[in-house]
Structures are given as C-alpha cells and as structure tokens.
Image (cartoon, rainbow, N blue to C red):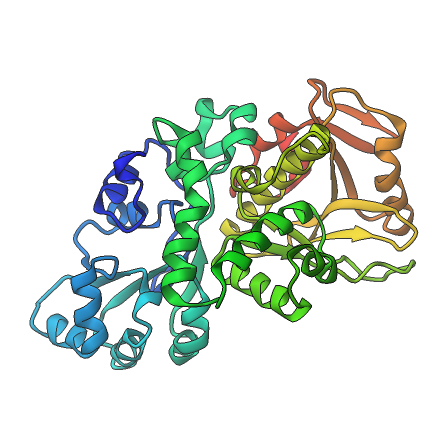
Length: 404
C-alpha cells in the first residue's frame, strides 16, 4: 500500500503539487466554487494560483471540528487579519454551515474573494449552495485532457489507468487506481452515512459498471443488485452527487423519429470504469475496450465543454428502431455528431448511425473516431484517428473539425 494514498492526508496535496502538467482552467474574477472528484488536483491548482491565500483545510480533523462547532470563527479569524483578500476553503461540503458565514461576508462587500473547493456537491446543494444566491460562480475541474499531458500522453495507458492526476502522476498507477474507489466509498459514503447498506452500494457499483457507455435501465440494475428500483435510483443520485459519474440525455431537437428515453451513463474516468468492471470468461474483451474508449472520449468532451464555459449541450442519439450516435454536441460552438469505434479498420456498418443522423439532421457535422492512423473523408463523414483527436482537443479550440 502506498503510504501517501490516503485522500485526507497532507502527502496527497504535496504529491499533487509536484505534477508537471498544467491545467486548462481560468478562475472567475470573484468568489467561486470549484468542484471536482478527489485526486483531480483542485488543492494543487489553488495553492499554485493563490499562494498567499488564507487556507482553511477542512480535511484536517481539528480544523473541521473547530469550524463545525463555531462557524462564526471564520469571521473572527478574517477580521483579525489585514490580509490576504483571498480565502480558500478546502472540502467545503464537510462543514456546510460555513457557507452561511461566507454568504454574509460576500454580501457585506468586505473585499474578500472566496474559493470553495468541493469533491462532492451533495451536502452543498442540499444545505448551502442556494444560500449564496448566485453570489459565487460554479466551476469544475476534471481529469487530465490529453492536450494537458502533451508528449506524456499515451492512449493505451489512458485506457488502462484513466486520466485522474493522482493516478497519472503516481509511481504505481495501477495500485493507486485499484484503491481509489474503495477509499472514496469508505471516506464519503460510509462516513457521511449517505446509504444505509454500504455492501449493497458496493454491489451496485459493480452492477452499474455494465451500463457504462449505454442507456441505463434502473429496473435491470435493481434486479442484478436484488434491491428495489427506488434504492438504485437513490444510489445513482449519490454516485452523480459524489462526482463519480455523469449522465447524458437523449438528443431530441426537431426529432423526426421516435427516440429512447433513458439517459446514457458514464463513470467520470475511463480508468475508474476499468477498475470497477468485472472481467471473466463470459466477458468479451472487445465490449470492455469499446466502452472504455467511448468513455475516454466522452470525459474529454465533457471537460472541454466545461472549460469553455458550458457553451454546449452534450447528449447522445438513439432511435427506438436501433439507429444510434454515441455523442452529440449542440450549442454555440456548433452542431456535431461523434461516433467512437475501437477498431483499426473502417467498415461500412461503422458509418450507419452517422448516416441516419445526417438524414435527420443535415446541418450536423459528422465525425467518426477510430483506432486507425489515417484521416479520411467517407461519404461526407470525417474519419479521424482517436489519438489525434484527443491530443488536439483543448479549450482554445471551439470548432471540433478544426482539430483535424
């Protein structure tokens, strides 16, 4: 066991400070929340961006107890100091009562900027975020983009271990990845008491991994876990609130055909999915590899859109007759349909979904990402090596076709 792995330990912050990779993230001018799963480098980025800030570390048990007992202590500490003007509260969800004090200090216009870090939105959304009434912007930090890693990016390694900075920068990424989810569950779910039966929740994590990159059917997952559908719905809410997963809606604008209604499910990182997905004699490797590649592309596009200011909606398209496109991007940056294939050779059937989408939406620019090495145009569809696409995807680029 690597000793610095403990997510509440100072050594993790020190390890993340040593990362050589930049982050594509611009801070708002005023106060803001910065959400992101553990290990994505929030603390590291903030310490680098605001080296002179007043830092309130709620991961420290003593500090957490003090502020939980008397939240007004924060105002007393800040009133006794002439500076600094930036105040960072790390893991703000651990003492949501502090947000009442923060809200009042912002309202009083004392010239303070608050940076509120959180690896779970659950408590804040239920108890605190609304109290700020829009006084603080919301931003998110995601796993690395390939463009951030530059020459260090290796597609095969990303598919095996994912892009979480804590894992990428570890001497033994496989060992860290195997421990990541179990520690997350122990520290977040068990400590906060969000579910009554942690064992059932662990079975749910395994069962729902089969839905990664697919429309999620809660009834099917519930049967697999042998719990009620309402319980699975609650577990899914916890998973999303913990920032460990996200869902994409069905694209239905000007729909000319009947589409499915279930959202598509992804774990936030391809490596986390791989660590949770059971493998055995009855599991086809190509299914797991295909879902992993699609998830890697989805998490990149999600981060790209977040860093561009959420200018677009990400979704997917699937008709009841079976036509499907993995990812649809619609918004200020354009209208794109993206299909992901874990194959080095293009087959006519690979283009079928994009062609159907083009029949319904001729305005869309269509792209197929695959494991080959050549960029080609086939029947109006741009076919691009997946690694080329990922390496070029950065927030500075708005038009996806400009990447190729």
